[in-house]
Length: 132
Image (cartoon, rainbow, N blue to C red; front, side, top):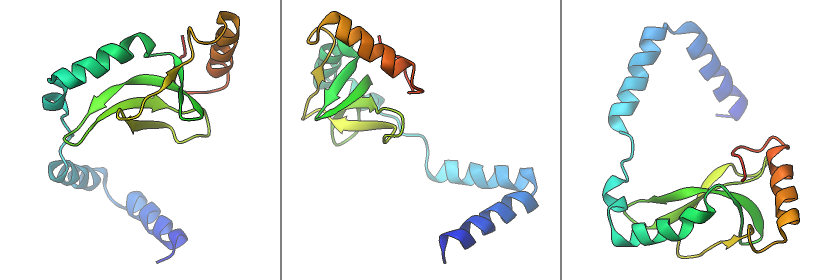
């Protein structure tokens, strides 16, 4: 099936199916795939250590490898701990990156005026998240 045909079929389905039926289908999907709960993995010393180290940098611009991104948080699952980043507009959006690696905080490393300008550029170019 080509993508155009699949899109047309979905379009027709949603236009021609009563809202109640669509809601039932969504409820079935939600039952099959309950929301992920990472709480058990956040109650560990390792998570707390990673979070406390990242906390002063959350909401600031950092380097993830060679990309300037906004550090928005720390997450965990049954396999790993992650830094959560928001990439610049046109990038890959919000993504998780293993905390096995690290990031380079730009605030405090760069000249204050240069960092302030970089944050201003981020905040005024349609990027999600506000850099401080």
